[in-house]
Length: 579
Image (cartoon, rainbow, N blue to C red):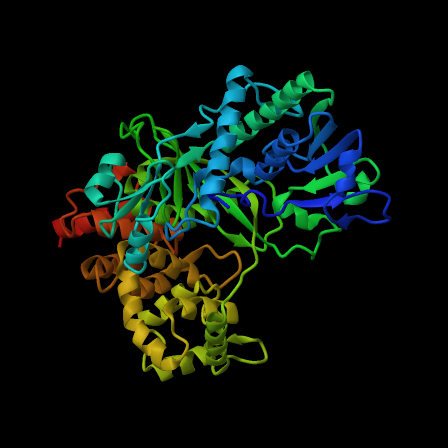
């Protein structure tokens, strides 16, 4: 299966052929081979995404020339109306460790074939989909063939990735390059380990026009096959919601379910498919007209902790978030959801492409992915068992969590104060949600990542954790987390001045002592602000990084700094003029 980094289930994972005949209830089964002796067959394909339209094409392509075939494609939103239509579209045949996936060569060639078919079809019939009717698409391309660049962001798997790169597919070679070579391909890219993997033959498809074009190709194939043989072929799209499979009973010889995550909403399949659902948000950015640093036409898209899918020199998409167990399959994104997505994606994306901070966010889209079930080897299962036993030694059994008393006992056993920044770093590693509490799942997440299933191992890993957090691409995320972690009330969005000063001293004090002392002095004497919000918090970190202190000579209030920082600088300048 191809690795397509995006907001959709990889093609075919949730396609189930369901026979709807004279049974009282539908049964999951393949259609009987005796159907081939019939004069005609009628199929329903549920879902008009990557899987659904690929199935429709192959049903037509492989049908006997003498057989009458009728295919109805049904989707409640439209072609590409689910997660497929808003995916990132970064198409390549490799795992995160750049190892060829299972049957990679075969799947890669088949994907390229379908892409060529779609491009050929759209060249002869300009069209797009709107309420069940075809009209011209507004997108600029179906496929952008500039390759994909994957910077190695950590040393952990570098040797494995280098070794895997040497055995890449002939049809999609991987070249190991250094930062200088990477910056020729993508100016201003950051390659922390001085190593990046260039998948020169990889492709960035634009999902919506690709899917529209593939449907046009299906129409053309049906017409062509009907003209050369006795069996008529036809395909039709119906914008229709299917709430249960019984609605289709008696109408079709077979129903093929290609609904991705939405398959789990059908009562006949609910609980029967081993799928996990995950909502992903993609952020859209454009470069302001007054900034001339366009992305060159030859530049590849980027794969890292977040991916950057280049649409054109002044537009790109960044994705994607991971909201597990979500049931929201709408492509629409609320302001609140978009804001959360930006908080998560921007630090990850700007770590490899710092120039992104000059770009402007102008919208977001989302889809509900269908993910395969988790599998764990026996060794991993034993590790989880030890981690769970470790958790139990500190957990409050009445609530099933480690509470503040348990955290205090943990700190004592680790020989650290509960106010030690390393405990905050540990909470960051666990992605803990509530201050002073660790759930079992958070504990597992953090300790599995640290490979620490005993107290002795955890003690040893704390110093390594400090080094991990100190890396630039991690520290900004940790800094943002520390603020969120201290928001103890529901819907709380700001911290009081006293808490901010304590937190700044803990998180930034070792790095920017002069700035922290001065800012906290100012916060304690000023009367205008009683709280600090996330935007002010993050911009103060940028202030510490970018502004010469205490000279302040490069501080420019016209650069849209928060007013609290303008006032702080004005206070400092007055103080230096009238000591």
